[in-house]
Image 1 (tube, rainbow, N blue to C red):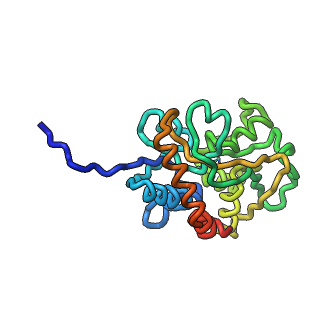
Image 2 (cartoon, protein in one colour):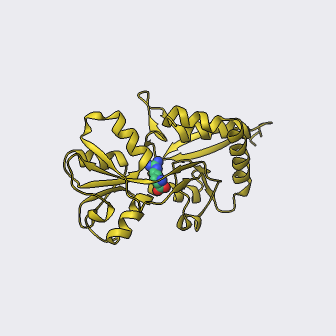
Length: 233
Ligand code: ARG
């Protein structure tokens, strides 16, 4: 017979797609760091739970949640009606929008100019939704990548005409890669998106605890502090 430990510390297994700087990425030591990661750890501290981070392809995060491989998604995930059919979300913790990335000297002026052009997106993202709405989801000009970094690197070597991805991530990339010869283009048709943590449907216990922790971290200035640290905001 196995003995039951007297105390088991709580653990939250958090899934993320860790090539999305400044929200989640690997540092030179190979540790996964970023705004979402530090925020998840602060939430864990509030709840009294250890936080374990798992790197999972973005389009596999919701399945990982529903298979119980992870308990929570912290991956700059936009709260959408479509996703709400399969997961529950925390209250919003960050606001963003999409942006278009072009090669310097490119003549495209807006999203609609990209119709029929080779546009890169990260699989399973709201960037993909935007481009599919424009071009139809079967258009072979839509080039699907595992990560935004792969898409941007392909754009740099002339393999694409544009990339559509979350604006804060694009801005971070352009700042840290000044030699990239890439530029950002805004489009007024992009709507405001709100990031939330995702939970298995009906896991209201964790959802409530996380929302309460978010309230505290909002009030004590921690979220603001992390935004300044990672986004310079
Ligand atoms: N906000 C976008 C979405 O929800 C992109 C998120 C991608 N996140 C990531 N860690 N790769 O679809």
